[in-house]
Image (tube, rainbow, N blue to C red):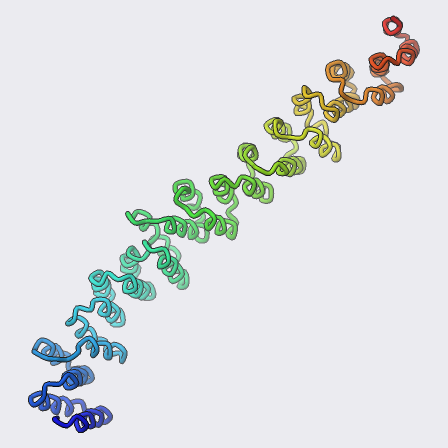
Length: 412
C-alpha cells in the first residue's frame, strides 16, 4: 500500500475480475497502514458494488477521509441508487438526494428532500417524475413551487400536456391562482387551458380575471379554438373595438348580438367600419338597420348611407333614419324620401317634405310628376313650378286638371 503504482494495479485487477470481496479485505488492510483518500473512496465503492450497504453506513459513521460527495456522484451515474442515497444523506445534499429517491421510485421521500433543498431545478425534476409515475398529488405539491416562475411554468405546462394530463394540469393552476405569488402568466395559462380543454369555464374565468390576463396571448388561444364570444369580450376590454366588430361580423352566427354590436361600434376609431356594419345589417339583419343607423346618426355621412342603400334598392328599410336626419336638409336624403313618397303614393308626406326641405332638384321632380296618374302628384308638380317661378307652366298644369284656385293663386 506504500507503493501508489502497485496499489492502483491491485484496485484495477480486482475490479476487472469482479473480486470486490477480496478487494475489501485488501483495502481494510491498507487502511491500517496508510491514510489515503483513494483507499477510503475505493472501499466505499467496493461496499456498494457488493451491496453491503450496512457496512457502507457503518464506514460513513466512523472516522474517514473519503470524498463522500464525489463517490455518491459515481454511484448515481452507475445506477447504484441505494448507495448514492446513503452518501447524499450523509453529506446533506438534499437536491441530489431528491433525484436519487425519484430513481428509486420513492416519490413521497423525494418530495420531502426537495422541500429541504428548495431548489427550482430539483422541484422540476421531482415534479416531472411524479407526473410520469401518475403520482399527481405529489406532483401538485411540487408544482406549487414551480408555477410562481413564468419560464418554469411554461415548462411544466408543456410536460403535463405532453402526456395528456390536461385535467390534472388545470387542477394545478386552479390551485395556483390562490397563491400569494400568483402572477399574470398563471392566470393567462389557465385561460389558455380552459380554451383548449374546458371551454365551459373560459368565459367565467375571463370575466373574473380579465384585468390580470395577458390579453393578446389569450386572444390567440380563443381564436385558435374558435371561442368568438370570448374573443369579442377580450377585444373590448383591451380597447380593440375595431377588431371586436370584425369578429362580430365575420362570426355572427356564433357571437352576434344587436345590443352588444351597437355598444361596441360607437367606440370604434375607423369610420369605415360604420359602412361595413351597414352592409352587414343589410345582408343579415335588415329589420334592425334603422335602429343601428339612428344610434350612429351623429357619426355618419348621410349621403353615403343613401347611396349604399339605394344601390340595393332598400330605401324603405331606412325611412325612420332618413326622417330623423332630414332636418339637416341634405340633397340625397331629401331626394330619397321624396322618391319613396312618390313610390308609395303618399302625396301628403311629399308635399310636407317639399315645403319644409327645399334642398333638392325641384325642377327634375316637377318634370317627373307632370304625367303622374294621380292628380295630387300633378298638383305637386304645378306647385314646384310655381316655387321656381315657372308660372306659366304651373298655370298650364293647374288649368289642365281644372284646379282653378291653384291657377288663380299662381297668376296672382
